[in-house]
Length: 389
Image (cartoon, rainbow, N blue to C red; front, side, top):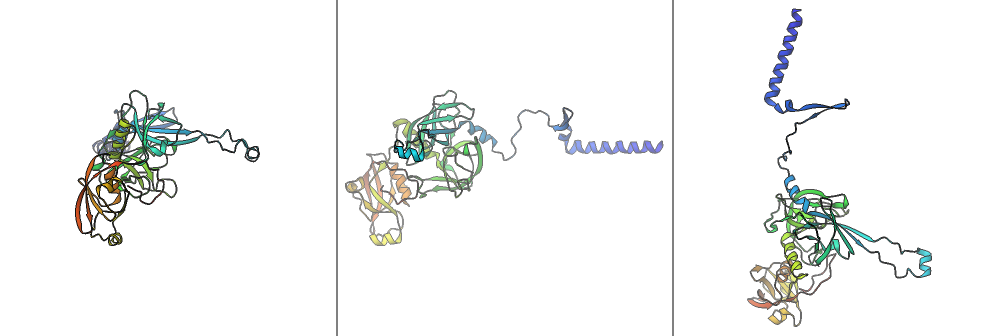
């Protein structure tokens, strides 16, 4: 009997010691409770404490802030009837194709105004007969196209709904390589998806995607259906409109491109105000300066953009710019490559004069050039030769 009592006392002592250690080092273990589910299995549940705080380093707050303003866009285009479909022989061999299904498309968009304005890509809505927007709260509504800008691959839509969630515009000019970003959209139509990554590069151009290129490159996964969606920073602010990916498989390979919000904002303002985007134009054919071109034209400049052709009676010709001149600045902006010249000239107001810094031979000079209105250009889907600016 004495031996049994001694064993009991020792067991109690060990259990009390274990309880003291757990209560000191892991008190949360004691706050959990065990619940029996119909007598089948017992599970451990944490006590109800309201909303669960985000884990350290979590980007949940950014996603929660921006996601409601990112929409899914579904488009449809009537099937085009074959012009030979009325030919009896054609119908004999290929059947009656009158019942062909309409073409459908999928993309994303971002609500940027409580008035119902939505930014997306031009290629998402191009040629569409019907556009339907689905909000994150499952509301559906038809949208109309306010205006498009193929040169930047942007489009502005308008919906008529109340209590719209609106995204906050960020400052893409302040982005740095290495900054964390999130991509939000509707890839492959699976539903709204958030992916994370960093800014891999800035100012990507000469990709042959758009006429005006100044892309933010990111490794946040972007897939088909993400086009027109949001690229946001860790504060949930819009930094870019996801546009394109580099891929050999059709899916994400870690190289995606977004149009900076600074560009998108300017396009949005022009389209809402005028229904279109107007840009400056001076009528020259520019090329990046190379030793060979410098030698050919006898110029001693080592920086800038060399003009290899000037449109007769165009704004540049009227101002005195000649083939062989090297443009080094437009207004207060320094010019080092063709893309910078295209962007600087496009930003000029048609009919207004701007000071151009250039070098002719070994002489530096300045000329005032009154820009004209840039003519419409076709959308480029593949790399092409430099077009006339």
